[in-house]
Length: 192
Image (cartoon, rainbow, N blue to C red; front, side, top):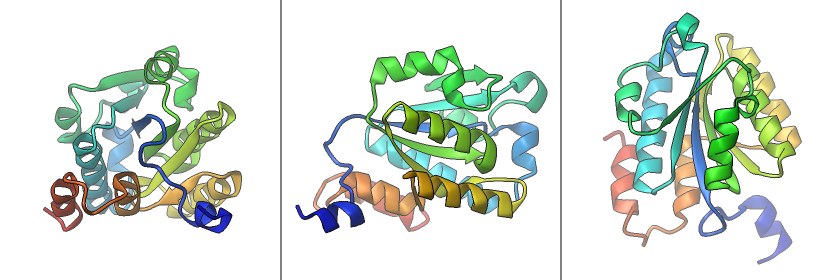
């Protein structure tokens, strides 16, 4: 594979384990997100897609006693997954999250959630510092002020984080339309 191809399309398939992290999509904070229906749809597509692709998923909640718990129906959909409660902005500051990283030892981590410029941003930087490859699902990540999300994405790209739409990430992980799981992922991308 040429160096140019590696730069344009870094392979995700079959090159180490992966983990999907859904950050702080909870109650009061979630209610303040602009364009919430579109955000919720893409979070749902990502959660279902990662499940089809057998990628473990983790949920974090920032001080749920103050901000509320993960919104429904995502809470029910991810009820069987590990839920990390934290007070640190970065998920990496929570001992339980470090336990998950030690358990799965993912080389690549896909992040989605809120807010892009705080918890998602700080988690991504900490994961990069640990030597992990980080992808942020742009259309499944938001901030109360859209410009703050845009600034975060700009900085994350500059640091080497992949910032792409959910569809791109799922198809990048899948890698091949001949893969039998493609037929299960495709309806999600077409809007069910």
